[in-house]
Length: 306
Image (cartoon, rainbow, N blue to C red; front, side, top):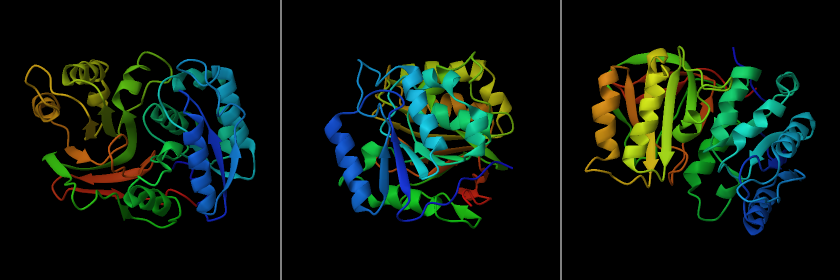
């Protein structure tokens, strides 16, 4: 059974890190102020405001900030500022034994999902595809906050991962399967194939989402995952949203799913509110989830915090 971090409580300390690309200083400050207004204490990593082109700092520096948050006994929740690129670069500099001994809530999406899945694989830690610091703004829907804070404070199970009422969850290939849920950003996972950090889908439910890629490029990434055997090993597939993904050569994201994912024959659910979309369901990476595509339900079968 995966390791569960301590539940989040009002007044807890949040550790802010920048693990990939830089975020504008005013956006970081805005997010920190909002967290403080909500009643949380904040600790800021040394390189949070750093910027060196498309990376915030060296891989060693970004990894050091993350490890400092894991070893700081005051920090209960580690919150990256954003994803972008470069998160995979910090992985060789992490001490997974130390992380396993100091489980914390870690959230994020986009390139951060590389880290989330590696934390499950190497430290047996449940983490959350959910909020980044850049989401702490007045324009973020309350659904996103409610999803995260409910999931990270609830010590009971089972509970449902549910879309907003206006966003239907679809079941395309019938099935009823249970397994650890893994996944996140499609582009990021393709970038780790062939490395010791590639995503492990064996016996697991795989959720994928993408943003700002034309559909012919999304097809290329999906095909790469298929050729790497990642769809062979999984027990079920969830295709989340493809945010701002333009049709190409007359084919849409829906076409891609119908023509290339449905024929795989795995239980398939689509349109889960994910990551880069306006609405972000909180997905506890590494937790046991039941996916019933006939009833169109996603049920978390175990507490994800303690």
